[in-house]
Length: 131
Image (cartoon, rainbow, N blue to C red; front, side, top):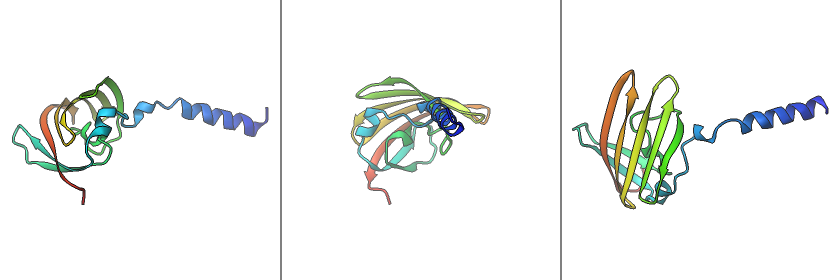
């Protein structure tokens, strides 16, 4: 086997070993949600936030927005998804998303961020298209 062939084989095996869970999971229920702008209303009184829903996975780590995290799917149902995630060195969480309609979901997420526990109970409702 030539060095180039061996190197190509090593690279292929290395990339195959990277877990798919390092990306947001492809969950059917989340993909079924109507895409667009959603308002997140926090039941603890925190000010509402807007999120542009493109894939549905934007709802999975509200407690750790913008971080690259690894996912483990606990449940992938037609009306409910349950996901654990770990953001290396930045914390972790568990998120349950329950679908009421294609434009309305309830989110329960909790975990550790910045060394402190968090628990968020959120309603996400579609309000229109993304700007």
